[in-house]
Image 1: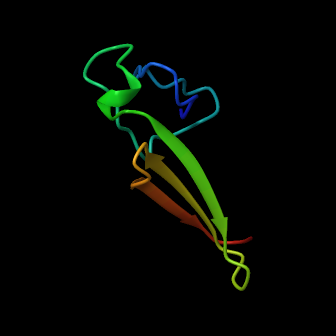
Image 2: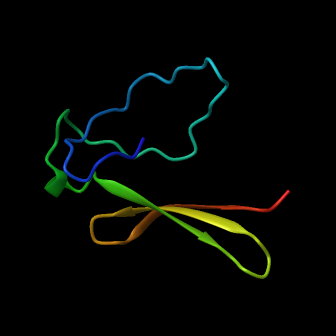
Length: 75
């Protein structure tokens, strides 16, 4: 879960399997309510390729470095 940039870092919590999710990326702090400056704050970015319609989803750290990326092909 990516949240507000000013929030403390928490997790990971047990995964609720109600809707059949699976974890594809996880980076959690060593302690609960960690400061945003500890390096466990992330924000999302989405890019759509205008020619192929491929969608790229990225999670970036506070320095803008991509820590996770997944590409999705159009249906």
